[in-house]
Length: 113
Image (cartoon, rainbow, N blue to C red; front, top):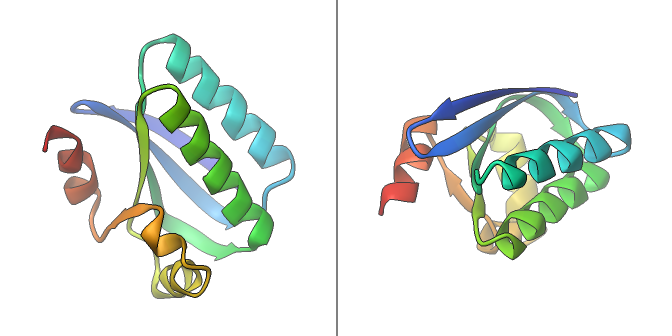
């Protein structure tokens, strides 16, 4: 998995690509989130549009990221999850934990509400 970082409006968009499977990617993500927190950037949107597969470790990585951002006084929201990823969120009941949006625009705009 790789991710690109873009700043849009009042949040940071992390665009995930490939398979989300935790491991070293979780460490890289955690390090990046702490850098953003140190810069005062606490509102994150994870763009899942480029994700083909996610396992339980990948879900754990997202939960850890959400916890990190909420402890810092911010939030992490999901955007553009495929049908496959969305059904994974429903089965694990994480759909009740994460705010999930169909489009990137809806997700980024949600921080102005």
